[in-house]
Length: 355
View: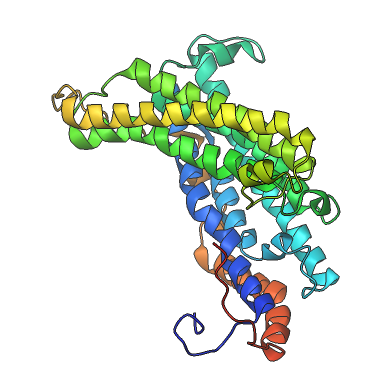
């Protein structure tokens, strides 16, 4: 910021990267946690059941607050200016973030299990077929959660100090966040709009069948697209690179990349068709949807809980200890490193035009 304002003639690249990832990874949770909020409070209701455990949901959110910020160095495993010790500390904390995601997976699965059995489902898995898959507002979020399973598994590889060296700065990385931000977050938000638009506008969803088709197109397209990105990344294709130009120039293009890049092209095309369908449903609902009576306007789908908030222990109900622990952990994980980086900073790197 001082450089952009003309206060300094250059930047310290390592310090800039430290500050960028100090905020860059937590920023993801600004998008992900609203999706989790919908999974906890709305999906069980849409499915016809109840949230399994409110206290477990509270614990998951507290753990996200505690662990989501001091993890930025797992983006910088290849940075020579960050010592191996601090990289290891952040790797451990990054693995810790996976735990509240496991809590969420269990809580959501148990909630859907309740809903499926309420609708006449039986057995360990047959109840899944009894869920109301005809609801686009629900199906979108269920498919988002399925894709997020694979995104989360890939995140563990990203967090690994050793395995990260194989996929660092390759196309694997955008393949990963297309399964997280591009699927868990985006597809959940799409599902939310399918009940929120009628709620806000008082108009019936333009066409539920088209909305349902849009959701499945996104799921199929993203599955194919991310598969191609992950595979071509494992084969060494770099990220942030115009591979189309590389194909034309034949300077460093690997012939083994052709098939996975074809996957990304096919998946991307399906995603584009899904996006067009989404616009049709949104615009059609706002301008051409049938007006609903007050009784027909959908309410906010807020779920009750089998284990309610009243069952939560006191240590889950108070903010101050969790906030204090969060600040303390940030200071421990970032304080010494940032102090040394600021103390030894040399603002000598000029700006570059890279496009």
